[in-house]
Length: 103
View 1 (tube, rainbow, N blue to C red):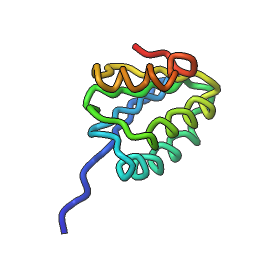
View 2: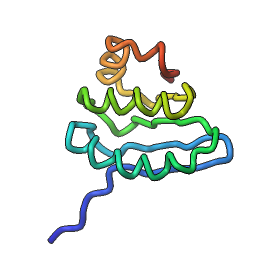
View 3: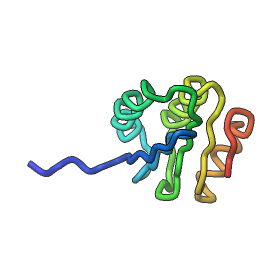
View 4: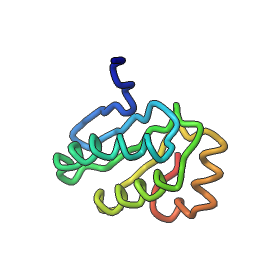
């Protein structure tokens, strides 16, 4: 049995929780990272959430829903950084500029 591929990494500071996504965010992958993210979310305590999409070349609608939930849980303090052009286009079409800071 092969070890499971790491799909998300976290960097924490007193100001923010950075979630570094390590592969395309299709429906199956999003479901897998959701559990790890929710565990970290319990320790958020007013910090901002940053999603680093530098290694993400595809996002499914389930990932868009995941981002909306994260923005609500983070009290609207969500930034999405290192966005590849194709993913940025999807986020803009979906209206994410109104719920997250796209950098």
